[in-house]
Image (cartoon, rainbow, N blue to C red; front, top):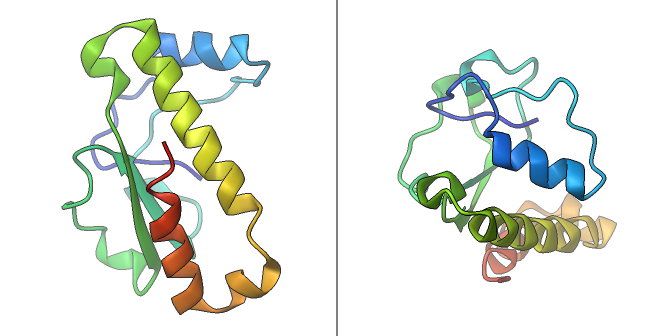
Length: 121
């Protein structure tokens, strides 16, 4: 699931164009609030460069949190910024998905791995 604290209601057109160029389906994507998630997540990973200090809503409870800060490409409005954000996030997501199953079962180890993944550029 993906959501934020201050959604605009739409996904940036350059983000949509980049995802389509990468062969990723974009139908049904929208900018949405974390107040409207259909389920409580097990892990919350903030990605915006300024989100590390934000407080998650109380309903999220005791979830595992990590911060993978990436500069918001919409602030620069250039395609290279969107490409860079995509490249960083893709590398971090791939590293997360490559974690061994036993890593995911141990929250202390998983937190350490998630924090390490944040340094992938």
